[in-house]
Image 1 (cartoon, rainbow, N blue to C red):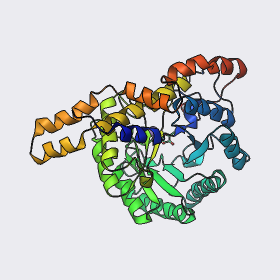
Image 2: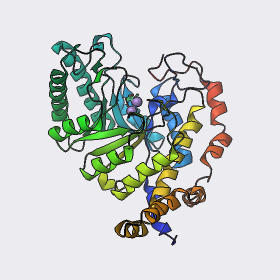
Image 3: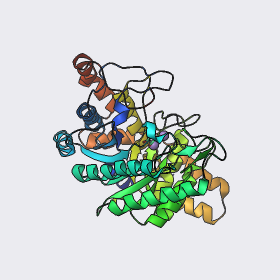
Image 4: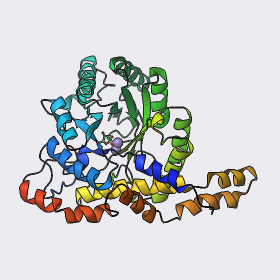
Length: 390
Ligand code: LRH
Ligand code: MN
Ligand code: MN
């Protein structure tokens, strides 16, 4: 394999940004049990304190996604200032219209207009919060759907969804975007109103350029070729971002890159191939995970590193050799080019990138040595639950 231009690879790795989720720092679990951990944040501010540790040790995680109302505070401008004092910014605002009794039959697709209005007003409030925090993106995921054939009119629900989305879209300011997230199933099991990229894409296309699709890697049927979806959305200019996590079964929310690092590499290769790492592409690389049994901060650091490793391997693909093998119909040769990059141990390269920017080459070890875990275990009692999974 010829030596790739390592300075360009290093520059891309240094410039990469990965957003961490506020809820990843809180206690979480399954519907069977939430295992409380020592030292877990009690407030949104303490979640930011922990996120600052992740950024300190990795250097690539300066923004934190909020989930409203899990991160409700009186003064969002003050929260943004608190973040800034710690070298962070508030990132994507995630709306939550799935934890209220009124939403039993849906939120934005509910048959009753007054429930839809309630959901809409929450979404609009989230845009107000974005104005206060300086956030660019509003992330929308809807639990809406039905459990039984005939329960509601599939088409009418799409109409209601389109109507609410267009009202939110109209409220977006310059430089703000709406990211629509799809998920195959759960909590609804018969129909889901935004089950797949095609549905999300169709709505975003009608809405306009500020509406884009977000790909949560845990939200597909087993065997789905996620990198194909990424390639297609990117080609259409409709890929807004990722919620990275790992899954073995369904929406497991395990650490990104843990279950299937090869899949993460294939996804990141399509991102690189589509020039999606550039700032102009505007793609938000976010984690959407919870850490039910493992310590949270080092797990988030590990996940950030896993995304970096997949990115590094993707950047190392010898694109010229690949194109040549593809042109000449050299199936095995083309596959070998891709596998050469995947099989490269990029950990020394990433260690070097970290050292060159004045950081410890091993972020997890540096965190362990920092004493932060002991400090929060001592200083924080009665940590907050992430918000769901009780
Ligand atoms: C839904 C989802 C969505 C929510 C998050 C907590 O499964 O992926 O992104 O906001 O989980
Ligand atoms: Mn998600
Ligand atoms: Mn999910």
